[in-house]
Image (tube, rainbow, N blue to C red):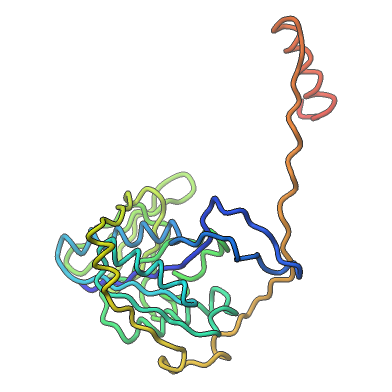
Length: 259
């Protein structure tokens, strides 16, 4: 089975985020960049599916030179090949533009299944996976926590409010991963050493018959701001639990106004 995994490089969740002077982007100088956590589930699931019936796993990302790092990580985990769409126009794309780029890159590669994270932890727009499927005109299932493939059909269990949705679709298809699908492996030392020797195929928009106008952002970031700082907690003093409880009720009623 030929499997493609879509990857994105994002700031590590422990990174201290600062906003640039224009208020429209974040400062990137001191940020640690990592593979999007939901994409880790996608790589792991691809490797498990590959192990069962056999096949190949190709990982694809779009971005600048540093995005090669996440592709190397996926190769170290066990992916067979990698493609990086490296073009200056990528930096100015929104989710739909990135999806158009990834879909164009996928068209040149044989595939039975495409897997992606359900969202990226930086922009949280949930767009790219579904849009790639739409551009390729293949079925799409989202927020998957379990999948089964049999006789050219994939059955996915997806989380929905209050329950689980079970859907089926013929291959080729695309699904996006939710937490709980699997436990991503750590790259082994031999895997890391092998990944360093593997070649990453580099493509530009022109290589895929695209130009910057075809993928320009349809949306615009007008401003960013950090969430307000939380107020310090209030310590309730008292000689006994009863006194403290009475004071707590008083504060909840008069100050917090929740009772």
